[in-house]
Amino acid sequence: MLLLIEKPIAIFDMSQIKRGDLLWGKHCTWNKGKAGFVTSATEDKLIVQYYPGIGNVTNHFMIPVAEVVSGQWEIRWSADMSQVSEYGIEADEEQKTEGAGGESEA
Image (cartoon, rainbow, N blue to C red; front, side, top):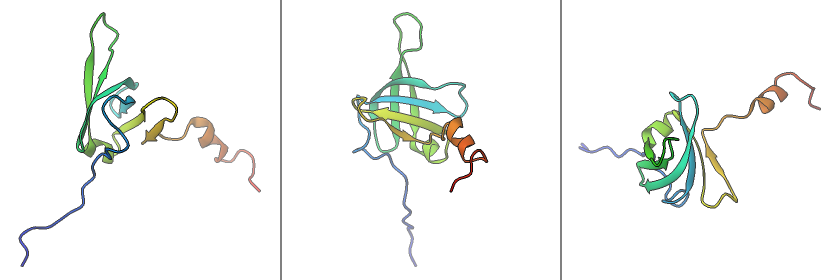
């Protein structure tokens, strides 16, 4: 009889995101997203520094991998703005309405 059970777990892919990358994140409880840069990237958590709009102050938010897996976050990130990657971003309203009975597709 086995004492341990091995289960696959979700982790951030460190080859895709790293410290210094630009990131826009929106938690499902926020009205709008926040843009900043990644100050710490580990397999289980991202920490993002951002400007909250008050004088010479910065703040941060954390993105735990468990919340990303459960669909609580929308994230866009880029190392140099030449290519922007997305995770959890829904299609725009324009794309949603095109397939919802507008013109027939042949």
